[in-house]
Structure formats: C-alpha cells, structure tokens
Image 1: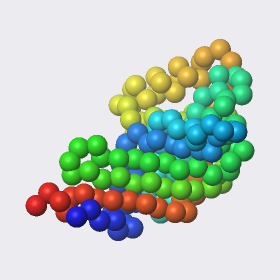
Image 2: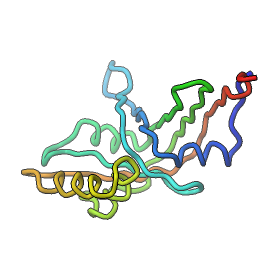
Image 3: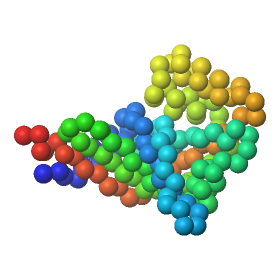
Image 4: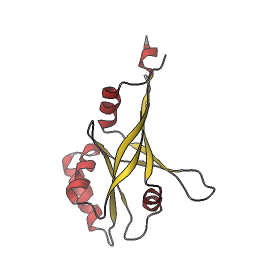
Amino acid sequence: MPRPMTEPERQAFLAEPRVGVLSVANDGDRPPHATPVWYAYEPGGDLTFFTGTQGRTSRKADLIERAGALSLTVQHGEFPYRYVTVEGSIVGTDRPPSPERMLAIARRYLPEAQARGFVAGELDRPAPGFVLFTVRPQHWLSFDFGDDAG
C-alpha cells in the first residue's frame, strides 16, 4: 500500500538531482502553466531554479511573479514509484542571478566542465536574461509505493 513519505524522506528525495515539473497559475481560462525545470534544494532550506528570458519578458517568469507561489513535483518514474510535490511562496527573485548561483543548479545535472560551459554559453548569448527564483516550501504531498514491492 502506498504511504506518505516521512519529512526526512521527502526532503532527501527532493534534494536528489531530479528534473522537476513546475506548475503556476495561468491567465484567464487557461489551465495552469507547467514546465520541466532544473532546481537546487538542500534539506530544510529553500528551493531555487532559474529560467531564461532572452532579454525580453518571459511568460513563465511573469506568471510566477504575478502568482507569488507555485508547485513543483519530482518523481521516481520506475517501480517502486515515489513522488514529492512541494507548494511554496516566492521569497526571492534575482535578476540576473550570479553565475555561481546558476552553476550551483547546473552542476547538479551536468558534469563540472559541461556545467561551466552551459552557464558560460547561456551568459554569452545575445541579450541574455535570466531570473532565479527562490521558493520557500510550505506544503508537501508525497507517496512512496515501495511498500508494494513485497
């Protein structure tokens, strides 16, 4: 039978380098905006992620700033299935983020040399524009289907 994860389990799971799916309220009659993101999280702390605006306004960034809150879901997509969804408020916006903050996220997903190359390449683009959001987790939903493995 699936069970909710304990607080230490869900925080450790969220701290693993997984691709998260961000969901934020949308305009008008459209459903919530959802998109995959790289993120950083340390147990007990805030969650951070960045998005590119390419020197112009970003719909995703605008929606996040307008809503002031979002959800992020991460999952283990093979049996035994597990997932964590965290809902939280935006507590920080860095525009532009420092290369070090971008690198702290990129190196979770790429080897060091590629992470450095990715960040340098993104910052060298014509009219680069990035925003780094800091989210304070407030509500958690999690399930671990591992108990069904028996």
